[in-house]
Image (cartoon, rainbow, N blue to C red; front, side, top):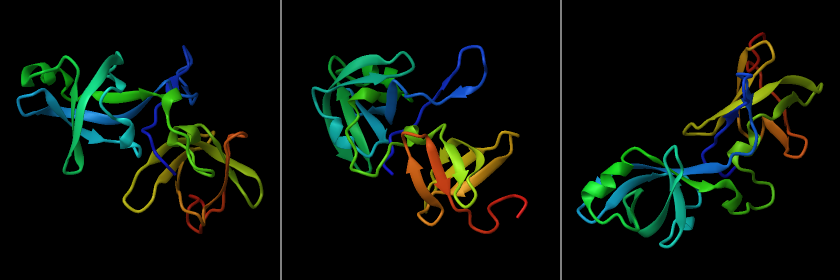
Length: 190
C-alpha cells in the first residue's frame, strides 16, 4: 500500500467520524529553520517526494496558506526546503512545526491494486469465512514490520488486525469493504 498521510473530518453536529475524501493530504512536517538563507528542515511523509519541486505550490498549516517552493535538497533522510519570498532564517521561523500539504485531487495515480491509506478509512471489515461484519476500519497504525488496522465494532470494542497478505484477502474500494481471514488469537473471545 502506498501512503500519503491520512485525514478525516467530523460530521457536523453528530460527533461521529465521516471518512469522506479529504481535500488535502499531508506530505511532510516542517521542523526548524536551517542555515541563513530561509531553508527549513522537513520530515518527508510521502511516498512521492518527487512531486515537491521548485515552482510547485503547496499548502502549509491549518489555514492551508499557499506557498511556492523556491528550492529543495536532501539532507540525510530529511529535505531542506525553501519558499518564494522567504529569504532568511527569521522569516523561515514562521514555519516551525507546521504540516505541509498538497491537494488530494493532485495526487499521483497508483499502480493497479494499490490504494492510498485514506481510501481505506471507514471501510467495513468482513470476516471472509462467514461474511460476518467485524467493524469499521478507523485507524491505520504504522509499525516497523507491517501496518496494523484498528477496527471498531458497533459495540465500541476494538480489534487490531495485521495488514498482511495472509489476513487481508480482498479490498473492494467501490463497495468499501475489506475481507479478512483472522489468525487464531486475533478475536478477543478466541
